[in-house]
Image (cartoon, rainbow, N blue to C red):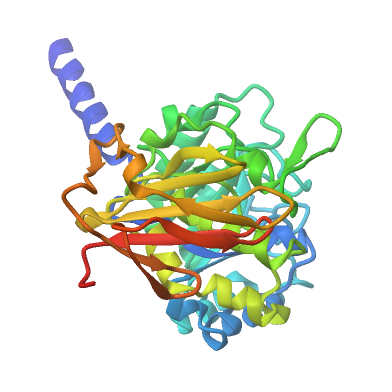
Length: 405
């Protein structure tokens, strides 16, 4: 009898381990959407979300591939109800989360929420520690499609274990949810999170500057290039269903249009989730033009799912490359100088390849078409040097392809 009980227990443990998993088939390309935090922090409400959903449709963002609208910290009351449930702030969200999710879904979009692995969120609202399964069930009832899960007030929690608990809770609740791990890269999630979440942050919070660090006491906010230069050896961990997340974008939040283009190009070539962080209701035409450029977005959404990497840096012009499906390649030339740069890139002088993924480009045997993605025009082929003027902190982003010349 004792052996039988042990065998039954082993079987049950095996079944339980099989059931404990993240939802498969989601985020096969980097998720695209919008998050409220960068612009609004906790100053969020029901009408804002509806306006953003309307803007997705009105300004072509939905058509460009953006689908998730995510409410960050501050959507709930300061206390749980008598049954331990999270309560949407009745002043901010008078019709509750289910009605709001229904509105977003009716637009053909998906709805996301935020919470935290600790006892409190970063802004001091109720966290999910000890309530993971209860919260996950509530998210399923409301129709949540995306959960951003933060790492404040976690005391001595083990990061991998804490995120596994919420992963399992979401799976048990039964509604497929993209699980966004936001523990800032402190515990090297790229080493353990592939089977837990669909994306994981690699740094602290972004801020709307080109290359700066802004201190906040024991932590810092990071400019675009500070984040890009972090953890450059982790690209091998990214791929379909599991992405290195460089944080919500600051495009449209105060940098120059040129810097915004470079920012967008880099998030695209590095296969980061494209999560907007600006107020779409007041976005300029140039900002919307950048954010809805389908040729640039296609580089980010390439099915091969390879994260790009720095190839060279000559004369303070960074060159990044990304192998694509069908033996195509994306190149990003970013002018880091404070004056325009005259590019003269001789294809024949460079051996182009990605040894991590075993991809190599033989230009001696192939003459490839060169396509300028931001200006959406052809620039000839690789049998001639690539010449262009790149403005201050601006970018030339191209694709090499076997299309007819």
